[in-house]
Image 1: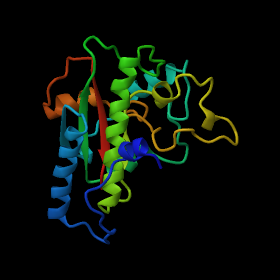
Image 2: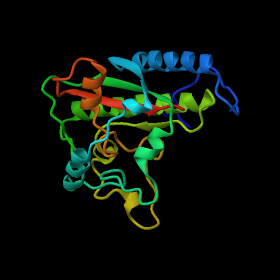
Image 3: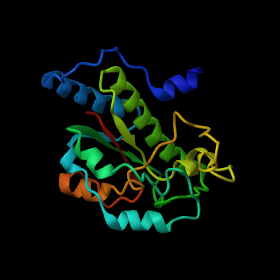
Length: 214
């Protein structure tokens, strides 16, 4: 694994074995540290959220489903045997963070994203989510699950004619990077921000990521 990929995945400051039960005090310390790491890695801010703070919206799912010009295995998201809402409810807490993009950057939806600087902003969200997920695993939270922003195909595979995992027998060419986004899972980041009273909410250039830890 090259140095760039190692940095992308993150390097935990220590490794802890998976325990049969979570120590509440250690869990709170780890959540605080994960917030710090998100900011150290480029997030403007990060907060701890309860599973009940995650807002799901049928309207967002409908919007993603209709935005089908740039299809990928993660956009729109289709898990016929799994319920994302029930899965998220099974967690206790997670890390919700924001990255501020370029002034005036629009919501690119499913893409494509023509402006390289805008793709870089979205890439930062994926980078932070992947780092947090990897670190959580090494901390002993082996079921941590991250959600980024936008359509991973628009960020990592802008020049590909198809999302390869959608073709029979083909695998993702960026398996350590590509993942579902909050909106493709039907999560309403703006509603979460308002409910949490976590400014800013009007700035459309702000993009969000979420990691459910345990």
